[in-house]
Image 1 (tube, rainbow, N blue to C red):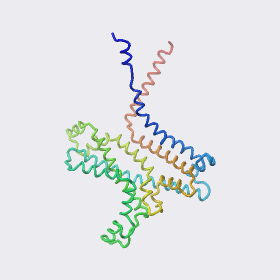
Image 2 (cartoon, helix red, strand yellow; image 1 turned 180 degrees about the vertical axis):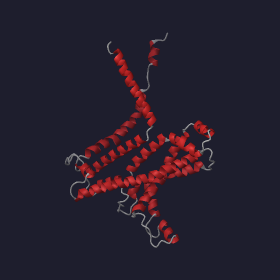
Image 3 (cartoon, one colour; image 1 turned 120 degrees about the vertical axis):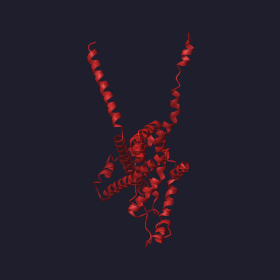
Image 4 (cartoon, helix red, strand yellow; image 1 turned 120 degrees about the horizontal axis):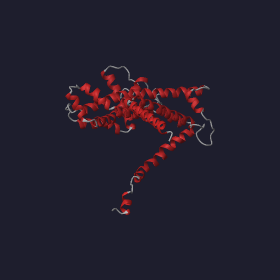
Length: 338
């Protein structure tokens, strides 16, 4: 017969120690993420963003969203609307080629039927731009696309293709946007490729073997087996890319001539930073713009998640909830009199 001491020893649970291991994360998150977020909401209700300033309520949000007032207010409204437009254009312009290129390379590198030599070398080289600092990348492309005739690209265009004068890659509207899109794609497609490769390698090989036995070609295997099972990773990539794209700051901020910003690549993050560090900063207005960016990111993230969710799984969960509800009502009607 077991003693009470043995039963007491076996009943000890060590699950609580897991909370001690994750406690540092929550402490750091509260100090550096959660508290600044709440404080930003508070600052957005003040004129100059501190407790001694004037309480303006939702006035900063009215300026951002509607721009009703004098010329300066309308100019601020138009500037932030343009910044939002630039942000969406730059994100769409780099995410679509990024996901297409990453998916194509991930399928190639994980296909055992393709005897590609040097896979490891190519994967390392393609991932390298992701670990290079944004400042270094911006400096590299500023040198490559210098508007002088001695810049590498302009020298090639004028010497080989007969251009009469150098092209201003930094100030031109669509060329500068194209360069920023290319930089973002070049920097991040390797990271996306690695994540998609990990997801493809997690698919059971038996599914590919069954498709091969059934006589499916490469296109059918990709569209009927690989792509549907990659849905969770594609959704994750889309949401994280959208969050990073809406907060894009480093390349659009650094790709400039001196202190002159190109208004066609100024993102909302650059707009907030410049307004915050202006000669007459209005911290409340900058905080309101940050709050607006937070809500836009949350709404678009929820929309992306809803558009890519598994409808069959959601339908099954709904049917289970309805069945449980009906069973509960029947039990209540049956045993309600007792």
